[in-house]
Image 1: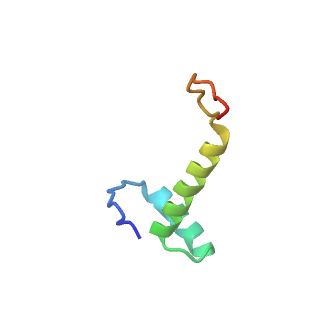
Image 2: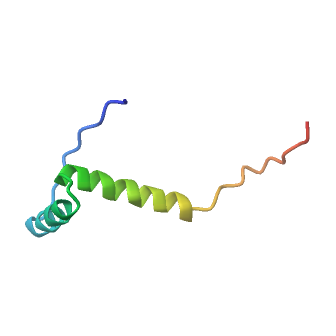
Image 3: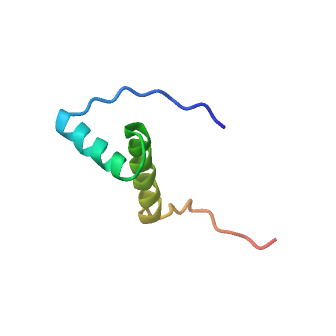
Length: 61
């Protein structure tokens, strides 16, 4: 497994409380919930971003 990066993240007390409650509802730690939310956002972004055409035509063979 690849080493995880450390990130300092500042949240308002209200945001912390909401994420903490959400995490508890889903049986995750706050850190786990934040990782889950970021993963979901990235997954959704990949689905919605159109693939960039490189301008190169594919050739047969």
